[in-house]
Image 1 (cartoon, one colour):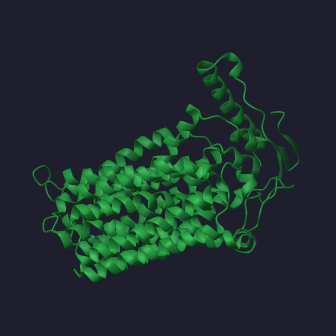
Image 2 (tube, rainbow, N blue to C red; image 1 turned 30 degrees about the vertical axis):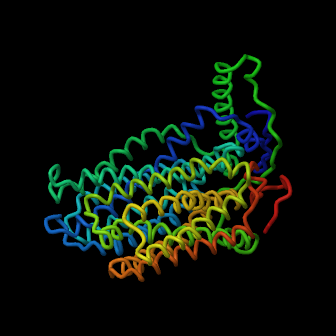
Image 3 (cartoon, rainbow, N blue to C red; image 1 turned 90 degrees about the vertical axis):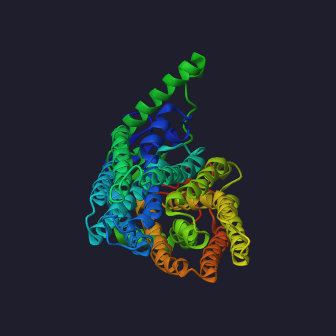
Length: 499
């Protein structure tokens, strides 16, 4: 055990958090990002492919007796219901048994369910394994976000978290382009192409699984759960790798790292009960709880309800062929990814409150303008896509910041469960009811109904932006333990607001 830690029974004093936060960016951090963050690419691929193949699945000869509305409505709602259930189930397991065991298990669940979706022979089978695919993805959200935020240095945490969550849209671009090829009946039969899209998701997931095996357990989780010496050894190994890289890239005198900023004393524990989690979230941090719910509900309605029905809007109102909707979606997906990529650094420099509130308010206002133009009949398929690209450039950064926010503003012992709770509640409100509601609105073929869908999404985004302006926590460049003192901490690590 390093000199930075001293154990006495079940109480440990450690500098592990400060040692992790003072590290410069290195190849080791890239391993974490690639091994963990790339799962969002799979999620983006999944959701986008299903939205784009909805028209094909409803056609005669697809191999499934299913309607387009069932795919974008009921199947989408089941996928989200599975994700909510998986987030809660696996979130609790992640806080209890560790990040690594769960981010391997949840990916395995996703892979199995996606493979079985590709083999669908009836409607009920397709619906069942859409639920279990979501079940695995929901667990990923809790396990991955908690692990990433605990491993990435505080100066980079905001931008890295946003870009990782925003990488969903790289998968969406791939899913859009893949669906174009898969739906081309000159290349694949109607009952084959859509199956191959799911098979590709399995292949990509297997590659990610191989990389992910090299990502370690969170040292922060280890030292709280009675494995302090293991946490110290792991950080020693990481520091050695960073020093070695600095030695190659700089003069030998630059190899040494700056001293850690402080220590924390905690009383180790194996698990935290649901009662303590509930008291922490609702009693100790009521304003932070309000913030988390507002952010998740706002972004869930916007994305799960309207954006993922974009293909149906194009075919219904602009007569775009089902085989061509992927081109349009690839454009708005690119705008979605560029938002977190270009704006992410500002969350660490300008700060959380300004950036979170603005990336909810601005897209909400712009979406109201888009709804007005759509109602007037002033838009074409191309100009509607352009409007959505601008809206989602900002909204994507805001949506990604929701995951960052709930991950960093609650104590470490509750981190995965907090992510799971807010994801489940917010997504259930916006992601289950939204697709069911908006599938009916868009399939009606009435402009006024789709305008209403746009306005609901815009209103919820603006409301969330106002809540963020009032309640967002200034977490930029601060240690996680400073933003929210661990429940196991014996002594304060600094001034922490309970707001």
